[in-house]
Structures are given as structure tokens and as C-alpha cells.
Amino acid sequence: MKRNDRETTFSRRSFILAGGGGLIFTGLGARLVSLQISQTERYRTLSEDNQFNFRLLTPSRGRILDRNGEVLADNQDAYNVLMVPDQTGGVEEAIDRLSAHIEISDGQRQRILREVQRNPSFRPVTIAENLDWETFARLNVHAPDLPGILPVVGEVRYYPHGPILAHTTGYVGKASEEVAGNDPLLRHPGFRIGRDGLELSLDERLRGEAGALKVEVDAYGRVVRELPDPKTQPAPGDDIRLTLDLKLQQYAAQRMEDEAASAVAMDVRNGDILALASVPSYDPNSFAKGMSQKEYDALRADERQPLFKKAVGGLYPPASTFKLLVALAAQRHGVMDPGERVFCSGRIRLGNHPFHCWKRGGHGALDMAGAIQHSCDIYYYEAARRLGIEKIAETAREFGLGEKFDISVPGVQSGTVPDEAWKLARFGERWQGGETLIAGIGQGYLSTSPLQLAVMTARLATGRAVTPRVVTDGSPGAFAHLNYNDESFALVREAMMSVCEQPGGTAYYALGGGFEYGDMLMAGKSGTGQVRRISLSERATGVLKGDQVPWKYRDHALFVCFAPYEDPRYAVAVVVEHGVGGSSNAGPRARDILRACFEREAGRDPTAVAAADTPERDT
Image 1 (cartoon, rainbow, N blue to C red):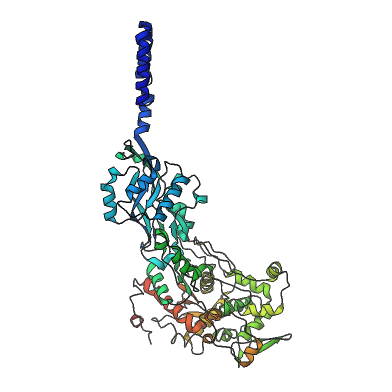
Image 2 (cartoon, rainbow, N blue to C red):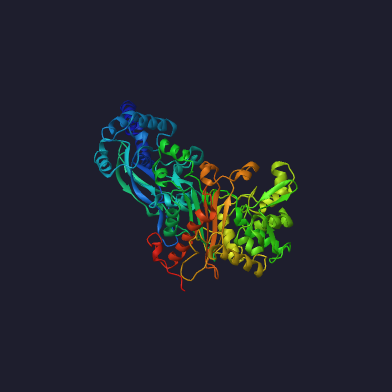
């Protein structure tokens, strides 16, 4: 009951008392006793409801850390201004009063009014965010003259290394109407949820739990005092530690700058992903603080796709890197003896259709190891013809192709490992023999991601079903042995070493003579992923070189490698979109990132160590 109502009631009863005598007086007295004694607690409660409010306290979001504890995603103080409409005495007037202290454009005013109309009057509405300290302090001084206006210190997500890890960490933003529903925390003006990357997939762990603060307010909604209660304090979100190494990630991105490219570096012993780089990138701080439509449109329009997670979502023909798996499959199924020599004249025919080697004049007679070292297409056309697509597909899947790895980063793609059933389901057509030959050199319907190429390389290096991970939750389990004999693995690994370390290997000269890091040898394989179809007439006159065609029609450059050759520790996969030559473009970048893995192992910063400072090979 309000005070004025009580006074009116008492005056009316006093008039009755004067005309009604002692009996009525006695009854009224009893009523007053009831009000004063029996209902004291009820009226005290009503009084408290009028004097005290509970304010929702948003939790601090958990941090994201690299493997060494370097902070990749953190929180900073943000100086914001909110409005509680039902405490203003008039929203329009409150905006007018506030505009004397901060600039409020017509667009902002209309946005505020729309939010006020859309939400209950007790729910705070954001007026301005990320104010400078001077403006925020001035508002606090004038707070007594601004009923319903709340200067508050909140948090804004901060990514100290900007674009370097944007595709992995992702970013935060306001919850959409659909997601927020009636959840008071999600509807709080200062609260943000994960919108992409690990921020999205691990949002529940990072988010924390909301708390509440009891505050005493006056008739205008101004805070008189705060009454904190330890039991209602917010609980911060969990910190998440990753397998990534910040310095290695920085180096990988730096080594690929000015390209549309991606790189994945893995520890083959435990599956830890040490670098997961896609370039170009974007600054997640722009999303966290609010990006303009113009900025967003510019990112979307860039043909190099800075918003795209190339390392996990980019799909490319594995090209000649796939020959390694065909060699293993051919040995497992006994269709080719490693010592058998196949003559390469530069082309073969299947029916009326010619199939060409990349080397127009041919390689001559090559055995299996030589065909890997020189990357002969004719040899692997023949191997694929003998195997058939089903056996090829089986081996591809065993080495991680076609698999969607759960590394907690959204956007991971499975790619395509085609077989007869796949083509029938996809196109309603039967598989053709020529398509098997094309698959044998990693072209056609085959598509893989850089992540899958790194996993494939780790499995080749170890002979085990290495599984990648980005989040360090517990210890990785033991990896099962792959069902291929040691001799088969040894042949393929030695051939990969000869690609990089022996004259005549397709990457030897592009790498400047091999790994050249101490006594270590590296093993690797290049690939050139075909983007456009080459006509018979173009083959007759000479296939156009990369710089003779528009950028978007140039072939992709791929390179996979591991080291040390004798006792593998790290594997790297690099894809340079439209980079043309796998050995010449992707190879040196992959080699340098592989070197950087050992620099980090030694505690050095690869971004600060010049190539001349790396150890010389012992003679």
C-alpha cells in the first residue's frame, strides 16, 4: 500500500470515528494493531521491493591460450552506457539529457527507440559502447542528473595477435534474437557469445555463469549503495589451452604472406597441431567491437577469401602427393612389385583416350621408388589401372582422406574420396576406367584439405593412425598401427627423402639442395593440383604456363614433408592456391616451416632467427 493511500484511508476512517462513537473506535484500534503487528513483515517486504533492485552480473569469459600459455583471446575493460527505460521518467527526454555529454546521432537515437519498444521497460538498452575514459568519467560525475542512465564497466573480447589466429579462435558477438530467446544473460546488452571458431564451438566452456548484485536505489532509479553477496557472484568461464604454438603460427603466416595459402604443422608423435595458418586473414577485434558494413563487404569481395578457413575447409586435388598412397596400395594388394619397371614415353592410351605425363618427352623406364622421386604420371596410371578405384579408395581413407576430423574448429571439411557407389549416388552414372587412371595421380573427383594432407603425411611417417587435435584435453591415446608392412613404408619414405635430398628429385633444386638443417634429412612430395581442363589442342601446341593464364585458373601448388627422415617428429603440409608449381612455390615454404618446428623445439623464435643462423650440415 502506498503512503498517500494509507493517509487517505486513515482520514476517512477518522471521519467515521468522529460520528460513530467508541465501538467503532475500538474496532479501528484493533485494525491498526493488526496492521502494525500482524502484517509488519508483509509491508516491510513491499517497502524493500520499492527500494532494492537486483542487477545481473555477466561472467568474465575464459581465455584462450597457446601451448606455452601465451594469451590468444583475452578480455579488456570496456566503458559503456546503458539505459533502463522505466527509470528514466521519459526515454526521449533521457536521450536529450545524455546528448549534452556524448554525441548521439539520429541513427543511434532511432536504434535506441526501436530497442526500447521491442523489449520490456525494465531491461537495459545499450546507448554507447567502448567510450574513452574521460567521457566515461564525466558521465559518472553527472550521473545524479541522469536518471535511468547507467555508466557501467563491462568487458570486450580482445585478440592481442589480431589476424594471426583469427580462423582458429574465431570471434564473439551479440546473440541473435533467435538464439537469445528469453534468456536474461544472452539478452544483456554487454554480453557476447562465440560466433565463429573455437569461441563458437567451446562457447559453453568459455562463457561462465552469471551472478546478481543487490543494489539500493532512490525514486529515480539511481544507485544509493551496493550490497554484494559472495553467494551470487558470477563464475568466470574456463581457460582453454591449445596445442598451437604462437611463434610457429606467426612464422607460418609470415612465410606465406601475399599469397592465398594455408599451412598445417603437426607433431607426428601425438597428433598435436602446432600451426594452423590460413592467409590472408582478418582482424577478429573488428568483429568483437563491431565491424562496419563497408569493412565486411571489402572482406567478402577479396578474391583471396580472407574470411575462409583454408587450412581445414579448403578442398584441393591432392595431385602427385596421392601417388604415395597408390604406391602403398599397389604393394599391399600385390599388383606391382616395387622392382618392376614401367616405361614412360610421355603418354599412354586407354581405349581411344590419351593420358599424358607431365614430362612430355617421358621418363623412360622407372621402378616404384624412381616413379615417386621423379613423379611419373605414366607409372601411376598403370598402378591405378591394376588396382581399381575400390582398392585405391580404401587406402586413401585409411590415411585420413575423406574423414571429417573433430578438432573443435568449425568448418572442417571431409573432402571426397570417390568410388563406384559415390559416383552412382552423386551423378547417377557408372564409374569409368579413365576416371581410375586420373585418380591414380590425385586428380579428378578427389579433393582433400591441408589438414588431411598433414594427417596423411604424419601417418606415412609413423605407420600409425595419427589423429589431430587442437585442444589439449587430457593425453592423446595410443595410435593403432596401419595394416601395411614395414618394407612398404620404408620404400615410400626413402623415395620421399630422395625427392628432397638427392639430385634428380623433383624438389631438390627448388629447395636449394635439401633440408640443410644440421644433419637432418627431410622427406617430402610435391603436387600440382589442376584447376582447369587442358584441351587436346593445347597439349599439341604446348600447355600454357601459369603466368599465361588468369590467376584464378592457375594450378594449385602443394607440398607435404616430414623430418627427421630417420626418426620423424614433425609433418607439414602447405597449399598455395593458384601457386602453379608445388616444388618451386609450396616446397620452400613447407621446408622453412618444418625448420621452424625445430627452432621452437630448441626454444628459439623462428621469426627472429635468420636462415643464415640455422646449423650447417656436418660434412
